[in-house]
Image (tube, rainbow, N blue to C red; front, side):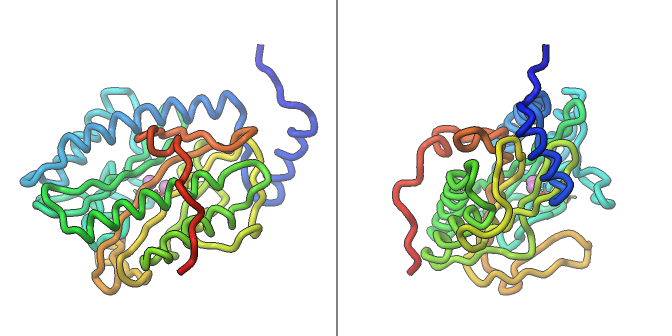
Length: 284
Ligand code: MF3
Ligand code: CO
Ligand code: CO
């Protein structure tokens, strides 16, 4: 028998939907996203195994497409507003939405792979940044800072906290490290559709914005630049790059607000996100 949530919670869920368009997920729906998240982990591991110099990004995308199909799933990216591929592969100064193609991975490249499979109608969305071969010290540093931004964002998630708390946790850390937070792209609700309300900015003020309650499912996906935050879109209509040409990295998990905090539904690198950030960030 299905357990139904207490009436108080049902009323709150209706209110979140009416006022904010935010769909509070049932335990069954969360389980559906968790299942899709299992495929996300397999896809990211597959991509990681192909992160070698000489590989074409189109080959990596094809492997993601084939594996997704072999599991009876489909990629949410394909045909999304006309997007032509199954994944996004964003290299160096590409902030996000890089289209896989004939670009060949080279020693020193910083490469984000972003996947969103749909499994039995449920969406899970995550991405990870890899370094190819010997990368520069600054690339290594940016990747570590961005990973830490995601961890701090996730640890801000708990009932009673706000979206602004998440943004602040990310922004204050990134800026203390003299990096910038991309403002032109944000995290988002997900699960039943690819992109649902709310928008999850990676900058913000503490105690501001939507208050989190259990059952909200959304991504946190900070894009952090070594230089300035400004971006522009290339002529292909998708590829977003830093305006100043500086390196950009990104990590993304899909998370659910639980009774006492958060759970990642795309739990790659669990040892990392399960441990609390070491110290509170300080703004320089
Ligand atoms: N996965 C991306 C996100 O994190 C969205 C990609 S949309 C696409 O929201 F069309 F470019 F695939
Ligand atoms: Co996303
Ligand atoms: Co994504």
